[in-house]
Image (tube, rainbow, N blue to C red; front, side):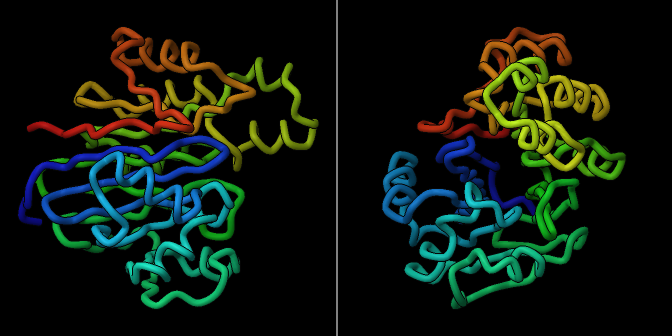
Length: 261
């Protein structure tokens, strides 16, 4: 694919109360997930100097409310093309029909403007969940949240990324000692739940992450993790300092990051 400008990425917010990741290249602006109300999404986009009408597409990873809760209203009001797997659409979580729905076939890449998108199947407790690698012919960004275990298939797809938004959801000891009921603890810590700090760090070792120029720790649990633990664990895997790791926050997300050659 011919390069159409550098890839930039940012977050409107990350955590159990709502998630949305913005990826831009040239005049192409793609929103991955939207767990916020339309009003809140509009407010958070304005912080990044964009409006809903600037969006080229919305991609959805899966149907859990913190990822899909605001999608239906956004794409209906602003007529934004919506990309989901068939399983996500059949979940019934979009609140009705949408004006421009497009099917994601897992493992089949497709183009949106200046971006090429690779949907990657992941182990998570949803109907047909995917995560995404996005590229422009010269640069690759991996967005990898909401999966409970690392598979060889996932490692293979994310091996050549220059930037990565990676789930570091919980610390296993904090989860074990925390307030969640036993059933929820089993779900979060299970193979179809969420990655721990340690699992995320091990993933970095498996993909040989020395070429990363940006690493964002995302989807941190407010009850079962703390930013210092997550950053320290990931930094050790990269042999760097914790302050090099960007932390995606629930309220502020993170501001624009740009992938340089």
